[in-house]
Image (cartoon, rainbow, N blue to C red; front, side, top):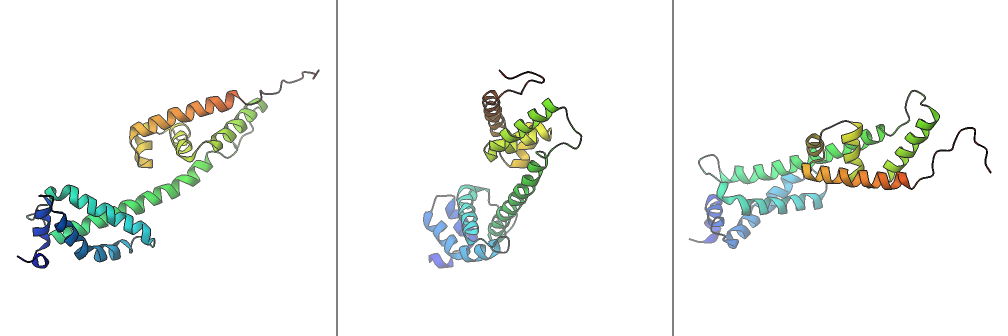
Length: 192
């Protein structure tokens, strides 16, 4: 049988036997179609190309999961691209919404705190702002928004273990920065 006459289903079946030629044929057949689908979700050609690459890797790795009784290969392939692009759009949307929330927690309080508390809050805000964004996000979600680690992980789209290790790193960085800052000036004391 000539390779150009193979159906998508036959090519996917050949992938289960690690046939690289079958993957190449699927790529030739589907890459431009999947690119145009991806460009409906994102205007960044580079972003869509990255997703397209990931989709073909996923097809290679999960080809044994394809079941022709549940749907056509065409649907299976297109849905993989569509789902990946939707994930990308959601992830970008989450990160866009997270940034204003982070800054919202760093604004001055509405009620006037005591002078020493005000100094400590200002000092803490300044130190938190110096943390790398990945540490700052975890710290804000867990301490200021009071989210448990698993919810912060979901919101940031990272594993729970990563949230916990970033939180530990953020605490160490805060401790180090706060212990190396000038002490609070004493009230009523005369300078010598």
